[in-house]
Length: 496
Ligand SMILES: *Cc1c(COP(=O)(O)O)cnc(C)c1O
Image (tube, rainbow, N blue to C red; front, top):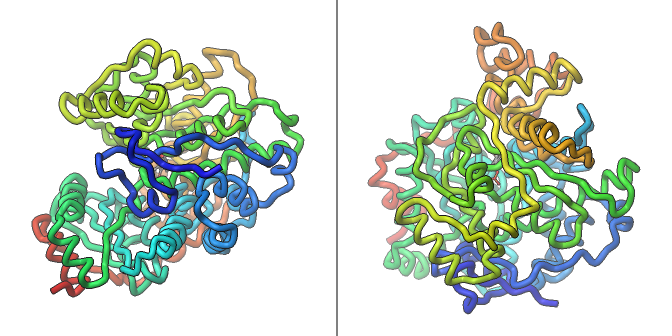
């Protein structure tokens, strides 16, 4: 059955999957959601015998119903290839009575690669299907991780260009080095004099400029966005939960139909929402455990039913989760509002105005599958150290937030259900915080010395992504004022 996508703020808007991917966000500001969640049409046993790519096809075909088999398999084949440093793409590692689903084996050693390695192919395929002949120009503002993952995904993809803006003094040295050394004739990286909000606001202004869009169209270009609310990022993320279950079944760690819990270190709520969709497709998931850092808006939301962003923004050692507005939560709100677009629009309007909203009791009752908690900075560091000392396994700071919250959950509930923890970044991406958690003596060493120390300590080879930037030449050194972002884009595209 065909899946159509409607807006979370207006059930009347309905588009096909390829159109939803091209548009990114609905005109009314809502997010695209499937009009029904399709059920898995292969048995868990059948899935247990499949490769990652095969599972990806079985899951994605159910959502992207206007893509042909050939188109979809082509996208999957181009995405999940030797860019990943392991054939299994998403290996499952057992440590301390939990299974760590390592989602960091792609080009930029963080989980965003799982979706951003396929999005460019879904997008160019979608463009062809909709007779779009314009070149697609991806504009992104980044605080570090997304920018590099998007650059790596779109680099060299025909029919696309990507322009990334980052705050010149607002990303880590390693993150900056990763971006400015990006190869590919279709990639542009610009540091701006300003912070991340300035970069984000600038990009939004450019997107909203109708006159510019018209001029672009006249010269064969159109903008699109690669951010995490695109359905083309959400759907590929459902795959690895199904794959994790299939792996556990194939390895006889669970029996067919046995339930598992899933723990997800959460920021924008995309990753855990994908697990929720997997559950709704019939994957035997019991609890969805939502782990936050000190920016614990979601913990408070699950506890009280009030979402309130009016609080201090805390900088933590898990920066990819330093978020006060979890955009993808809107899709869950829509679901528990029983698909009422008007009600969802009202709540989101309140969030945009007062910065908060409260859900009703019947809505709260529909959140019973979720458990929320958070880990402080100290608890996160202690979790890394304890796991390393007990097992020798080293996890990054984001994954440690999840592991810590899982510990709290188990203590509270005594629930012994087999559990998968989403491991969202390689410890090599956050080497300093990880090594300092293990022993403060490392604080004196340089970043690259620490990389070698970590490699020895964890008995894991230094990932290619880190080796590469040690010696890679700087390719992008463009810097502009925050007011000049649009002019910069026009120059890159040689717009008249
Ligand atoms: C983006 C990111 C997260 C948060 O994922 P969401 O889908 O935004 O909730 C967690 N960990 C890492 C390492 C990330 O890059």
